[in-house]
Length: 405
Ligand SMILES: Cc1cc2nc3c(=O)[nH]c(=O)nc-3n(C[C@H](O)[C@H](O)[C@H](O)COP(=O)(O)O)c2cc1C
Image (cartoon, rainbow, N blue to C red; front, side, top):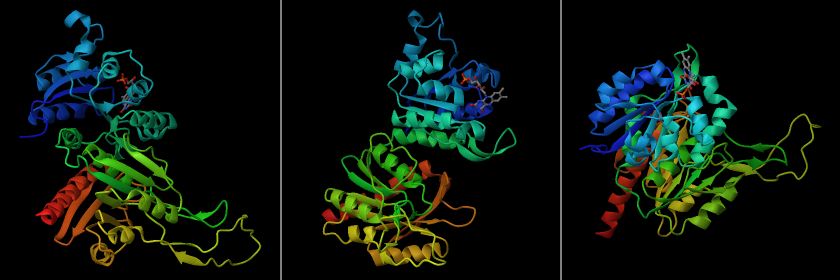
């Protein structure tokens, strides 16, 4: 039995080339047992016929806000009440913009506005449209309203250009939807996650940092929250919006991150250290900007606190998970880290070459614990975080049921 069996899913289709993939998504949702109803925008009907979706969903396809046949002419209210989940795939830049400002001028956006169902958007557009500050601001706003954005993927686009903007594959979108109906496997658990880089000041304007974007840590915070946990995210400087429903504590330096972790660790069940914490900081941070009046400058550095080892060494330590960003000997270095720091699990990821995780939407991980290695293959960080959260929860429950018995 799948998590989607008998679930009422409203599939919204907007006007983009990727609309042809919506037919496959509709079929996949039906195969997984969902009851699917479809709303197409007028632009969407220029890309794929309603007849195709009608045949695949085995239901009439809706398009008209002023549909006379619907109960009291209130089709949008009927569909809004009916849906347990709404997914718009592809979600055009235009529809994303309308949703961000609460516009209600067609059946799809009016239904979304009238519904309490969780909303998933699978954006698909030219990479320049996706990167445009207007689209990015709209997406950030929707995330802050609790909307789940799945994708987009990177690669060659229908317009012939290469970049981020391809709709996720239908199978991946279906996996995201299933996630919501899964058992709350971290219910009543408290999770603390660190994310992003740290910034070690050299003077008031310069500092030492690294290329971590924070995306993996933020995705994990979102996945743990979706699994029912109460999540605190302790974040270095990033450009990301904290996931909906997650408490975010912003810090700058490694020492501040260590202080914030220690202040929030006492009731924590699971600690996940994803942040790329600077190993060293300058002994002195100059009060004034360092002048360019010498040929060479020597900066003396001192070790920063090892947050992961500090947490793992606590009496009543939480289930502790660390990340190892490695450029070589990924597995053996991660195994050494597991033993040296006394943590429960290390997630090793490559940060060099074409598959580097830094500043990418994608990643792959090897999860290493005392029983062996589990490899999570390359996919979006959002999906990877969901898969990793399940692996962490399984090991957490195994560990604590063994300790209790
Ligand atoms: C050939 C063609 C392909 C298009 N592909 C996309 C696309 O992939 N993503 C997108 O956001 N807009 C795309 N557009 C523009 C949308 O169709 C247009 O903004 C439309 O108003 C969207 O309406 P809707 O959001 O109500 O469906 C495309 C337009 C054309 C003519």
